[in-house]
Amino acid sequence: MKYSVVLFLLSAVGATAQAANCSMVDTCLDNGPKPDACRDNQRCLCGTHKEIANCYINCEKHENAQSAEADVDKYCSALRKRRSKPLY
Image 1: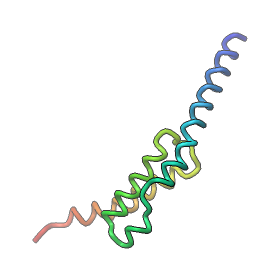
Image 2: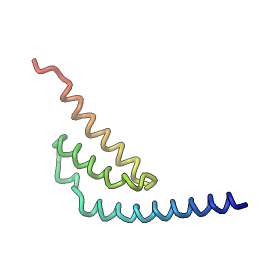
Image 3: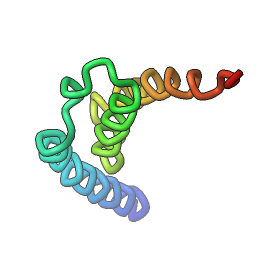
């Protein structure tokens, strides 16, 4: 019985800490870079989406966290492919 009470209290503390960190996501996104300003600049899009994904670091269970990481992969992989081409 004691074990289950301790486990419940620890999970409640973890959920509260997660919720507190998640409230910062909106502030980070509001004050962060906007991808629309990049237009078709791949380097800008890669960096911008990395900064957006960083907003979710302390709130990995946020509903948009995985899509933010997918956007980083999408825009930065295009940039990496361009760099790996031979220069001749």
